[in-house]
Image 1 (cartoon, rainbow, N blue to C red):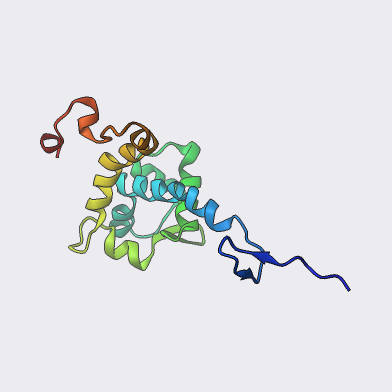
Image 2 (cartoon, one colour):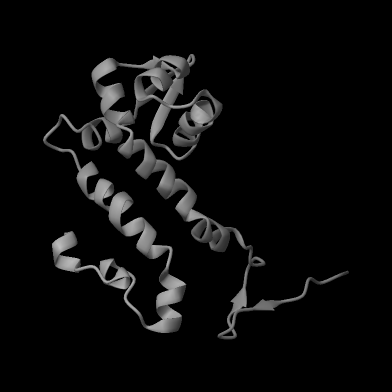
Length: 150
């Protein structure tokens, strides 16, 4: 009779199952989904679907002015992360994206996402530099005035 080794956490607690890197990798690569959503808001994808109804990839690509090379992958990535639905080749908003990411609705929350994409995303890319140097990683980094920029 063989026995599996008993695994322990750093605190000494016994673990029922061996650890996996899944959660670490999901968090570390989380920017992929985040930037996909931010780009969809930036190009007005959800508002276009809200006003134009379900569309196939070619029609949606044309309305948004996207290059054919990456458009289908982009739309399918949004399906994979739960921001769009696809049925019979037609893309449509989810209930949540229809309600919160159509800029014609009073429930639109995309403004904060637009700001995050345009202003904050790049600064967060410099987090490690800021941690190492202690220098600001906002508009002040380049000698700009934070309050004027806002």
